[in-house]
Image 1 (cartoon, rainbow, N blue to C red):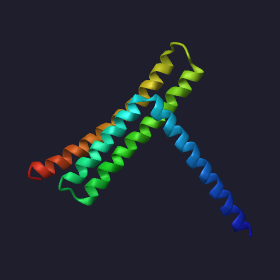
Image 2: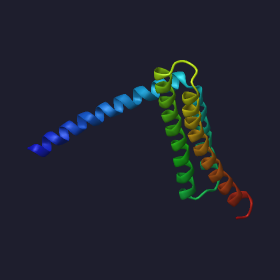
Image 3: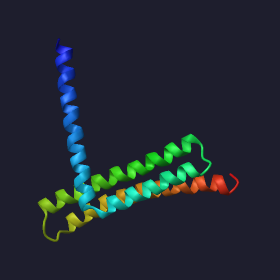
Length: 127
């Protein structure tokens, strides 16, 4: 009986997490051009992944990196919003924190770019 109550509670919590996550995505989509840009880049990347003669592991790796870019962009958006809330004026520490969040997105995008370069070299460069 205790396990049943536990499972019902967890299902309810999971439902809440899905609802909150979707609300966060919708809000970021409406307010963050960079999220829309990275989503478009991911869609184009996925199309290319299935046009090119790639191994399934290469497709999965590049798709995973694309999803990671979106996750980092959402985390950066959250970080920027909290910083704007607690430090609305010009502040060097706030700027540096925002720059670090942006750098996290950039590093993740570089990783995806490196993966794409590797795959394209293998396909077209004779690797």
